[in-house]
Structures are given as C-alpha cells and as structure tokens.
Length: 268
Image (cartoon, rainbow, N blue to C red; front, side, top):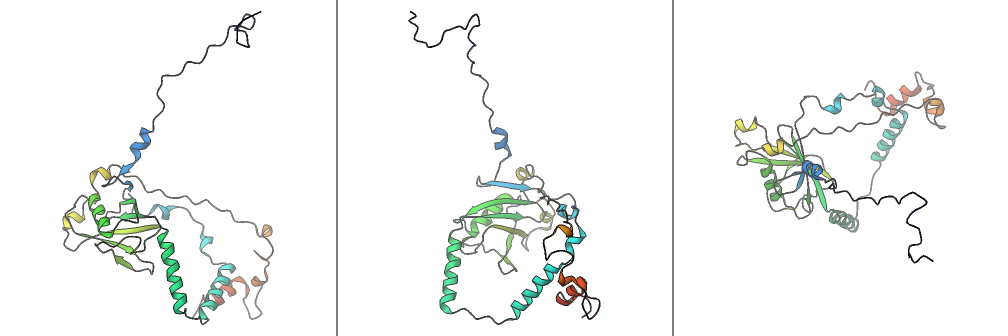
C-alpha cells in the first residue's frame, strides 16, 4: 500500500506532469503615460489647457446641419401659444412667508454644492479649465489666474455672466465663489486686460510657456444625425393628416397659416 499522501499519482501513464507556470519577472504596465497627460496648475490643481483655434470659424459652425431643423413646426406653434397665454394671465405675488421659504430653499440648494468648474477664457482665445471648492475666495481666483499668465505684473479683470444675464466683474476680495457669488455647475470666466496694461502685452500669447506646450484642441461633440421618420410610422396626432394642418375656411390655411397666426410671421 502506497504511503504517498497525495490523492493523485505523480504520472499518468507515461505522460509527465505539466510544468508549473513560472511567474513573469516583467514589471506590470504602469500608468506613467496617463500621469504625464495630467497638467498641474500653479497650486498643483489638475487643469485642462486648450489652445486657441487655428481657424477663425468655430469648429461647431463647420459641422453639417439640416436646414429643416430651423423650420418651426406645429408643436413649436402650440408651445409658443401656450406661453403667450400663460404670460398674459395675472399672477399672485408671493407673501413674505412664501418668499422667505423660497429663499431658504435656494440657500439649502447652494449649501449642497461642493465645487464649481470654471473655464478661464483668455484674450488670445486659449482657455483653461479648473475646479474650485467652497473655500475658494474671489481674491484666490485672481491669484490663480495670475499664476497662469506670463505677464503677471499687468493689471486684469475677471468677468462672468450672472443668473440674470448681464456680465459682471468679479470683485477682488474675500467673497466666496459659491456662497457669495452663487456660482454653480460650469461657469465661463472671461479674462480682460486692465486699462493700464501695455499694448505690446495684449498682442502676445497670454499663458505661460509650460501651459501652452501642453495645450490641446478643444473637443467638439459630434451630435448624432437623427433620421426623419416617415409620417406614416408616426403615432396618431403627429405628422401629416392632423386636423391642425387642414386648410382654413378663410383662405390659404394649412400649416403655414397656423404658424403665421400664432408665431406672428408675415406682415405686421
């Protein structure tokens, strides 16, 4: 009786056991190339640098488009009509309690925001993307922009679009970007040279060489082309054959008269 504790024999017939795999001494692939693609800003913050476009025409404007996308449809006319009716109705003003509650809800939503993505747009059309947290102030934002440009001693201003639409100059003080300026999501901040900046500096590249060397093209998102569906395959109430598109008793009627009536096209 065999005393071998192994439950299997060392050989099967005349075939030897397969050799055990020898561990490879080749080092595992490192992520060094990926780390080399990361650009660090003045304070070590990861940033994305985009070079100025070589063509005066934006790349998005060169993409092919369908002329029919700009033609208003029956759905657009109905939506326009409903908005006109809604704006013509009197609306009750909020009470003091309702206004206070609304302001409280806005403050709570703003408190949940932890960071804001800012794109600096410079006069030479180059741009830099960086993310800032709740603790960053306006003066720190100016200091960060100063670390990006080559002419650090020249005066400049930072401008942004407010929620109401008009552009405003960011004050160079201790106000917080998120709490006080109420910045959220993605915000474009425009870099403007000050009135006392030298004319020769305005014509030179704005960013420092170490950032210009790592700049890349701005990616253009390709919108997939949507093929128009045949009117026969559309559900009921859509496409041709709808009652709204039938000729009007008073004349030319049809879709064009409907658009002219509710979108106020044609002669005034």
